[in-house]
Length: 118
Length: 139
Length: 191
Image 1 (cartoon, one colour):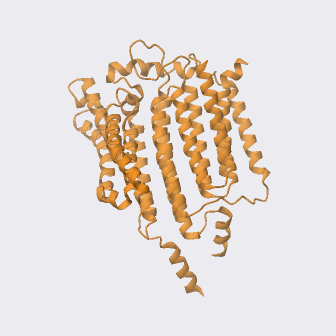
Image 2: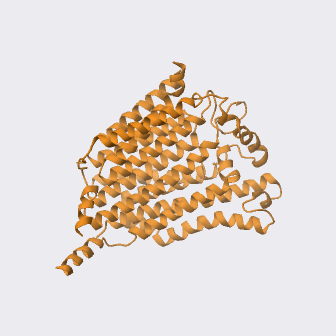
Image 3: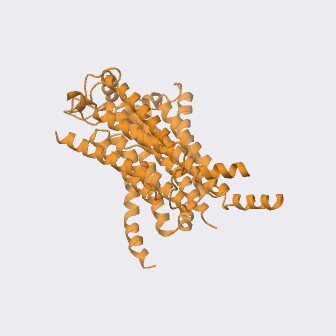
């Protein structure tokens, strides 16, 4: 029971990761694929931040009277990862807009059909 | 047009506090949560709100795309430039201790300049992305 | 105790929202649910004492990402998603389950959630926490690590953001939606 209490955060993060992964590989709509990719990214952040928390710890801002702090290094890593993630999402959405203008659709199977006929 | 009256009045009230809050987050990132990224995004959110309520043309008259391109490059230039300045002053690349008389003064100045560069760059890039997306839909 | 209750509630809402995003077909509803998902994860980060990360996730995920997706839906004029008509619908589900099982097997050895003696908390982090105030004089350890100790990574990140801005300008910077008319002209030239 202690084992489950100590690990359920990671398992739910992995479940969210798999939901995002499933959205990317099984749905054909391009915008939905990008949203699935974002769900995957957010769940990876959850996994890292779960590994950095300390029970009864405080946020890593040095203050008087606090002895136990959370680990600040994964916070720095995830901060960078969030901003890089939004840059990638913006670029992916710009590509979707151009694909729609070129092919007239954003469903993956219809794009494959039109690519073979062009 | 009467639907827009409430939105216009509320956003006229809200946009100045949002900008002030963004500046507060930028310069108090040393003492509380915050820093360059958050401040840049919050400031760009204020301008995006202005563009959504008052129209893209009004927002582009306020900040044109040319100025945004210059600001984006300026942000990266400030960050990299701090490193070059520290090389000229005798230290390694991005070694802030040579910027001031004591180590702590140099670190404070270096971190302030670097976060300023980050904030300016993130603000202008978010606005560039939004303006190009929204401008594509115009006939 | 109350921390654990809040934790479990937020995680349950996150899981329900993610499942709803997979199952729904109306694109506008999916984007709104994504905004909710992002905001719930920011709340979870606050509960886990990661205040800087929560700030950034709320501003960037629930703000910029959602706005960009809505603009994309408006530009592409798509309303609904067509259901996939793949040949083998069970294949993605099996791949996902195998990958999930492998990852869960990997987490069996991770130290328990919140353990202060885990190797991640005792190796380098206490040194940064002790040396940040004397060396940089800045109470926020995340800012001092981000801007001073690991400044090169932040320089790379700013350059990545700048590159994304340039790339978006190159892709959709022009005023006209001209590719469609060019494709029509090419078809007329062929016939």
